[in-house]
Length: 459
Length: 133
Image 1 (tube, rainbow over the protein chains, first blue to last red):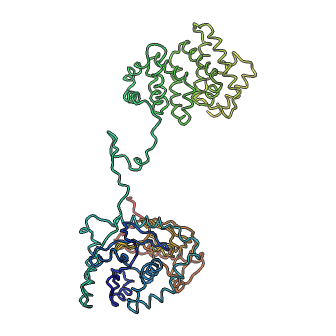
Image 2: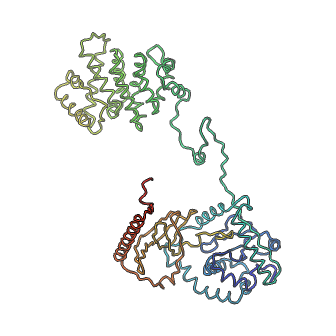
Image 3: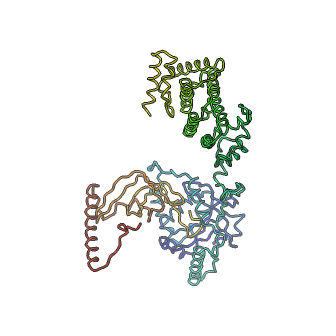
């Protein structure tokens, strides 16, 4: 046998292979050639033909050492399956290794083996490889197969081979078998081929770097590689303040009074921060919980801010109307409960009155937003309540005009906005109609009544 | 693909006709199209074969995705030898009827057995009649 030729073994062993091929026990190891052009591929070489990826790696046994530079590298193929499978593999290999000087090794086979091979070769190609007959063949691409094999290979790797039962058992058996054959055949001692596992390195080794202080455990790997978008940024300092004070209303007061000065106007910065708080769901909930506990003045300021920035808040509110309604309930509750000074109302109304100046939209928007519409209704209702009551008011000049203008404006918008777009308010004050009656003609009032009633029907 | 001796992979079985036995006792026959590392299987042109005695019936099922843990065993079907069988194929209705009859007979005999055992004071708890869980 030529030194460079891979070992097929004596006829006996080859025949034994064919016979033993169908047994489940460990079969003889073959060595077949595979040209890998000097590469020590750690993974899988591309399938040359068909769908069988083949790995090429060096055997480390000394006998094969000389092969390295000159000959094509051997590959180990072990078959534990049926003959047909084995021979099928052979056929595939043959067809795919046209550049190797493979055929000659076949002549060294045991004649019986060779006979079977040639017989099977005629039969097998028709049955096994007829892609025309099978339109769905090749659903699993080479890449996918390689991937699965890769995963399986990784599972097989173990750091400590001494602990690997299967590895140890296999090689014990192999050695015994070869020892037996040695005795029987009287050959030179064959070295049990040493196992070389294709070393597939795990590519994505994640070194955990990200640790969030005070968290329990680590951030998930997937999150590290593709971080999710955090909530819309809220000023950190304020969030912490708010967070700490949230649970107890009294403790919040100094915090609140810190950024709500004595004057009626909140400084721009603090106002912005407060608005940012209101943009977040938690902020809204927090404010809602807080409002009943605040002193009337402070509550007033907050409410004024809200009314003033209503369009902005409503726009921000679109994804999150649920929480605003809870805020709304509280706010409106405060409207009713706190003894609202008429100045405050009128101030608020004048703010509402300025809304249309900026654009016609804000008022219309308010009607379409549950919070907005509820706020509007309660404002009007409160105003009506105050006016119709006998309490002496101290109107400023022009206040009544602003009031009536506002009412007209609202009435007009209400009649113009199609019913379908009108959202139902959190509650419908009963004195709205009387308010409208005061200022508008009967026809318009009926029209508005019809509009609002359609909302009522839903309550 | 056997890079390491002592391993088995389903990669070579792809696009071949297989018989798959499931844990619930069903027998599926189909072309193995895709696998993964858990031996989840994708079977194409699947047929569920019901065996009763010497008869069998095939119910066409289309595409099956089988979770690996539910497979007892599977094996490739030799297309040439597929038709050399002593079993007789019957229609679906007939085989379902046969199956029903068989199941009934089994249940009755089981009942009698349990009854007999109970009379002798031996109670064998059955998994499906346990109350505790």
